[in-house]
Amino acid sequence: MTERTVRLVHRAALVLTVVVGCTNALLVALGILTPVTALKVWLGFELPLGILVLIVGALRVRILRRSGTPWAGVLDELVGRVPGALIRAELRSYRALWFLIRGRRVGAGPEVTTIGYTRGTMSVPIAWLVASVIEIAVVHILVPWEWLRWTLLIVSVYSLLPLAGWLADRVVNPHLLTRDGLVLRSGHQVVARIDADNLQRCIPRHRFQPAETGVDGEVLFLPGPDGTNLDLVLAEPVEALLPAFFEHRRRPALVSRFAIHVDDPAAARRVLDAALLA
View 1: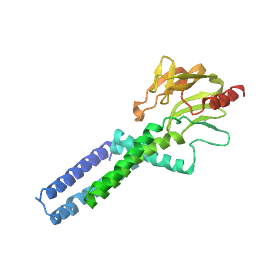
View 2: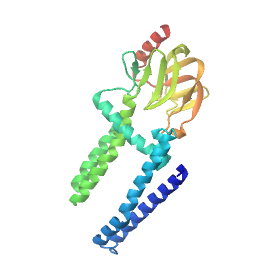
View 3: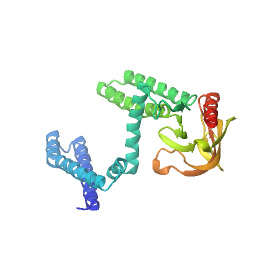
View 4: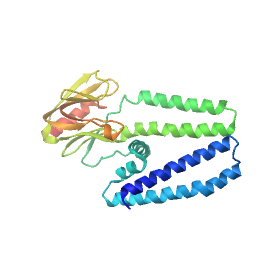
């Protein structure tokens, strides 16, 4: 059986399972089916269809892995590129929160200097997070039905995790200065790798604009809430990938200068200048 055939069977079984499940739930809600009848439908149709989806899905995973497809590609093939990106983003948020709790930084090591870039960028998201927590507490007190209170509480707390994970993702993924050069990041995404001998100058320069990540000519901007505060001048242009939520939407750019925001531009300049003299 080819991968194409398995994919078609898997999608058809998945769509049929969802349609039958939604129809069953709707008929119960409208009073057309009794709960007992709905249970019989579930046991007779939905459960076997669900088992078929799992079996065919496992077969697809086996075929894709044998063909050399990475796990990220397998996930995209099974659920679609956009849902796959959302699932990976959620899993990354949990990983980032775990790293933050343990005080770890991704890529840090004995011969690696980390350069943070989150100072001043967290005030608005954290304020929004606090407001959301207060709103959750108020709703939990005002809603009279206990089942609805607990349902809203669980859903609301769960919805806050991706935001907290996004904040943690930026904290635990700083820029990295190694013996080989500088790695510029935006969260988990690597924007550019600059070889040590290609980094020509490091210039403190405060720009209030632009406020969004982008490219202007041969300059790539990685700003904070009040712009950028450090310029990196290269001897030769390098290819960079602009950050984006969906990996397939990241745009390449050839740049010879980076205008970035860092937590402590003076300290960053000292370590970068030391790397230039090494």
